[in-house]
Each structure stands twice: as C-alpha cells, then as structure tokens.
Image (cartoon, rainbow, N blue to C red; front, side, top):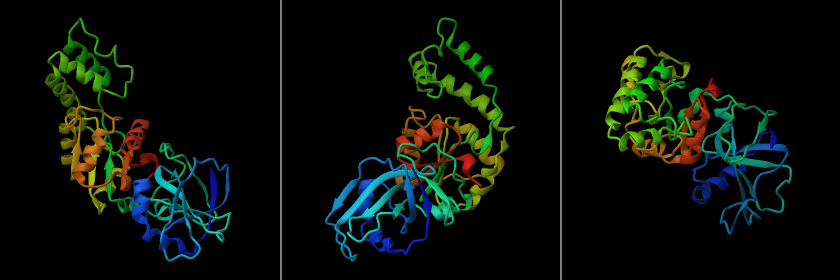
Length: 309
C-alpha cells in the first residue's frame, strides 16, 4: 500500500517510550522514539492487527493499540494506531528501529510504499549511507557489495569435479545453486571437505588480490557502530581484502565458520552473536535476493547495496 508523508505533533513519542518493552516483545525490534506520519493511505491490505489492551500511559482516552507489522524500504516497521475515540481515521503512524525520515531523506508530501513484513527485497527508496550506523550494528556481504571479486567460477567448477573424481558429479544433486551446503556435505561424506575448502580459498584469494572496491567500501571506516562481514567466501579472501583496503571487522563469518550456508540464517545469526546485537535492530546489506532471504530468516533489516547513496 502507499501513503503520503505529513508532519506529526510528536505526541506518539511519549507513548512509544513508555511501551517500548511491549513493542519489542511483539515486533522483535526496539523502536526509534518517533513515528513516520502518513495520510491518504490506499490499497490498505496488511494482515490482521495485533491488539494490545490495558496499556497504562499518560495519554488520555487510550484503551490500547493496534499493531500492523510491515516493512518500508527493507526496514522492519509497524503501523501503530492508538485505540482512542478521538484518533483521526485518516492518520497513520509507523514505527521502525531508526528514523525513516533520516535514513531515506524523506520530506513531507513524499509517497511511501508500505510492504508486507516478508518483503525485504525492495529498492524504490534510496538510503543515506551516513545514517546506517544508527542501527545497533551493520553486517555486510562481501562480493558484489563491498568489492567485485574476480574469480573464474567455470574453472573452479571444473577443479571441483576433478577433486571428486570421475564417478561423482557433485553438482547433479544440488537443485539450489545458491545453497552450497549440499556440496559441502557431499565432500564431508567422501573425506575431501578440507581439500574442497582449500581449493575454493586458493581461487578466491587470488581473485581478492585483483579485486576492486565498490563505492560502499569507502564509508565503512566512518561507521560508529559494530560492523561484521557475513559471506560465502573464504576467510583468506576476507583477510586479503581487509589488508588491501585497511578494513577492520568486529566479526567475520565466512565459509569456514558454519556448516550452514546463506540463505540459511545461521551464518548471519552467528555474526550477530559475536557482535552482541539483536536481530531487529541490526542492518544487513547485500546485493542478491539470497541476502534478503537470509535477513528475513534471521530477523534483521535489509538494504540492497544499490539503495545506498
């Protein structure tokens, strides 16, 4: 659905600050102490609301709230409406982990698209890279997000087939080309998992020596929050990139870190555990739909690298 951004009176900030614990229990994120105020909502098609009654607050004539979980530009959000007789039927207020006005540089009169909470793969809103450290932490994908990693994957696939030998086609049973866990499991079964990881690491490290930075890379050193890397690539490739471009990640989750592979949530979850941050107030940035699926399963917010300006 869509709505038009308008100015608010900041009255909802008082309510939000008083019930942030209740909101966190229902939405899994701590809301920014302010709302995005929209009017002229059309195509109103969100799911049934979460009704919370008996909220004690200093606002008059409020018997509770309605919550409609949603997302705006890839950021976890929720429409919040006080259950009050005098509350305008045409006014809609949205909460999120950070100020959506600041993150997306929004102005009154802008048309805003509101998506379902399961749709994080969107890019119609451009995000301010200088504001992303308003999240409790930011986790990055590597290849295609921070750098372009030139690896001849056709050659790599041929080397993998040679590693398995002539009687096993390691790619014949893997229906999802984005999920490599089946390949790793097959290597475990045949006792060549270490050799497989070494083969991949060699080719990726050689690629990392020739990798060129993408625009987002330049802003990482300025972030004032914990940062992590969550990639399907090898630790050696991450180390090479970090050394070349002077990067220092607080957590580095790579192919060797977990048995699971993106879009399974475990790699991203492990990164957040090491950063000591909660999913709902974490931002994951990537360039592929697999990355947005990982974010959804892990419960984080998500921005496509193409959204950042």
